[in-house]
Amino acid sequence: MSALSFPHLEIARTAKWIRQSDPEVYMINYILCGEGAFSYAGSDTTLHAGDLIVLAGSRPFDAHRHALQGSWSQLTLQFPRRLLPLPEKTVRRLLAVPIDGRSGMGGAFTRWLTDLNARAGEFTPADISTLASVTLDLLSSVITRCLEADDALTPEARRTALRAQINAFIEQHLADPVMSPQTISDAHHISLRHLQQLLAEDDASPAAWIRHRRLERCRLDLANPRLNARSIQAIAEGWGFTDHAHFSRLFRATYGTPPRDYRNLSPKDCANRQHLCAE
Image (cartoon, rainbow, N blue to C red):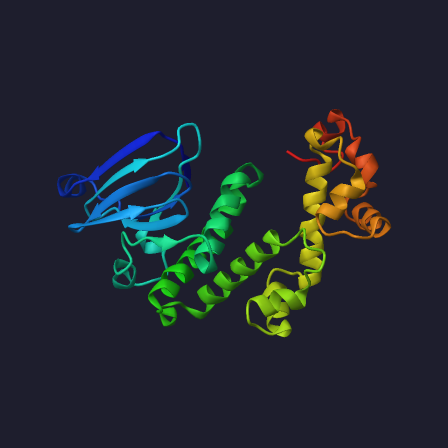
């Protein structure tokens, strides 16, 4: 996965170059800003910010992209074709067709890609297999939803895609104090029991996962020196904790130190890993 920034970009993938070298990959481009023209199989397509487009490295194409200088222009995901749990003939129907990455499953997938890019430094080599699996299953769900071909997904891929969509929803609504397991299940048109079963596969209950993610957001904000002027109570309320005393007890039980003491940890403590500190 790459984040690319450029004022202008032209790409030509010719039949001659494909014959010389074909790694048999799919490429997914998420357009962050600007717009561009794309030519594939004799037809032209215009791309706008928020669009996703699926390409196959084994097929010729032409692209012309204009973007805003000095800003990230697109996220590009590339992977071996054999890893996608969908038949090639299914994917072929969607090649070079703009996909809406602003809402629905497309929105869940683009939020996942954006989060991967923003938090890349938090992951280790041990996380690669899990991240790849979730990414490909979620992408499979986007493709099949666009083609109304959900039967092409395996049951496990469908479950993984739904879990990723639920996690993206939780991240998006962490600041809402009224978010609950019931609101999550209602938003995804599943029963509360089904939601509990899905998150149990990750060794967490819905309520525990919401609490964990809110605490992590608070911890990162407390470790951010740019937020020193913001009160601890304001940080807690900003991530959905309305009871300050309850938040303090949860934080201490989870991280072994009160929020105020955590905020005042010295760089030496963090360097020596005596406490869980932000990178």
